[in-house]
Image 1 (tube, helix red, strand yellow):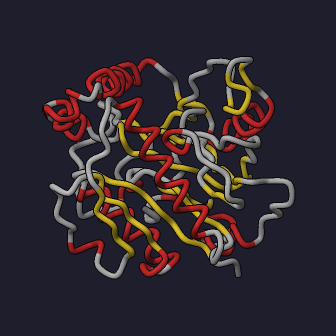
Image 2 (cartoon, rainbow, N blue to C red):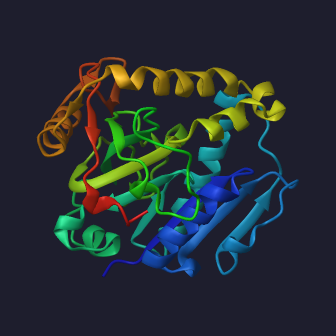
Image 3 (cartoon, rainbow, N blue to C red):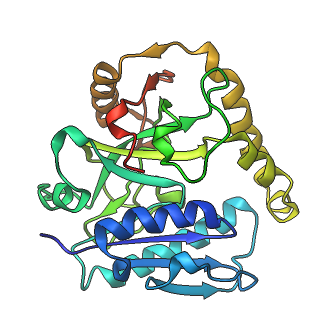
Length: 279
């Protein structure tokens, strides 16, 4: 079995951090989780006990500048960790790398079985979980997330270079690596929950600190995505996850050769019930 660690950086998001720690901690052990807190004005929550925690000065700059600085910090740490670990998982706190339950493998078992020759990173197919006004109610924070949210867009944006197998640097937000192309693993998915609850988006939009750093545009885009979702018909999960993986593995835009593309298609799927208790 390969030795695997996970790292993230967080600012004032105890809810998703607690889920992140619970999920990856059960799979990898809390002693193999590395959490950076962006800003010394934060208190370390109880959920992070037994993890490797570092509170750092607030990363300055607008969202574009600060994102680059944050990922540089995490990339440098990942390179250090790869001296004693075989793989490093890097995600935001609202992102969960999940193996399809039909494979009957844990995430460490799945990653340990992958042939990484020629690959500096591994990716799961991006699934952007989006609040569906016609189907979803208010988040019950005591229940598994995927038991309450099943509507998703198959998203190139969230097909990320989430697992480093070599000491290369991530691009901002873990969206790519600075060297090498994507290897999207069959049966592996990255679920993103940033659009899963409009109340969370509304709360962030009222945050003056985020607004001053240019986050309002990004959060407004998430809000519009929720509003547009009902107009997109559902496609079959089994058919379109296969098609999307193939498209994203081969299609690149000329100006972003190492980011996956999918011909601007908006493919909405219903996540199968077998995922419901995982996250």
